[in-house]
Length: 265
Image 1: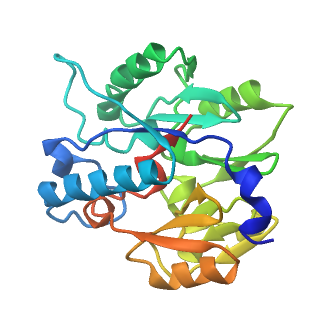
Image 2: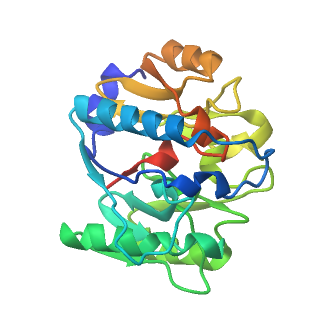
Image 3: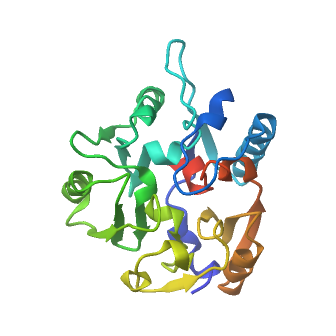
């Protein structure tokens, strides 16, 4: 099934949280890649370009703004890790990385100002939004270094039985969506070296680029793809979608992806 056939399904929400990168972005966590210098000015410019692209496509972008006195959050721009929404239910994540937990304060205030209820993940559970991938009525949850079994259990209590909640043990990637993402009609794109068991997914299509498996559906058959993944863009096009390359190079230096820069709600 191609993009045109699934337009209505894909547009569950046209409202998204974003958070500007902070000057300390270079101190953001990296786990599986070498640390390279980040050019902050370029990161900010590409973030603004992504925001403009979304707004031009009809999305409402709500910017999470830290208050005076908030702790610095080098990873804060990756808002999709700190908060996630599934079928209109918002979860406020609890990272296993303690330095990332202060990110929640500004997100909580932003959502409260818009009268959006966010259910927090509670200790001993840990969970990051990047470990949740929804495919039709199945919610896949990566269980590994960022989301633990207690966090998974809270997802089950929150979404089952309306959704089938499936644990996906992770050994090759930090988060589930580091290696896979879902297109609107249920096809799962994946970069095989980062996927433990592709057979978990009913319809798995491999992509050739490490940065190409993490896509975002803009609506109307358009799909955001990293500009550093031209081969993956060709794969997306072959499936009937219109791939739109997006430059997020500075964020990729800190293991950032398009989905983790955005949090639809």
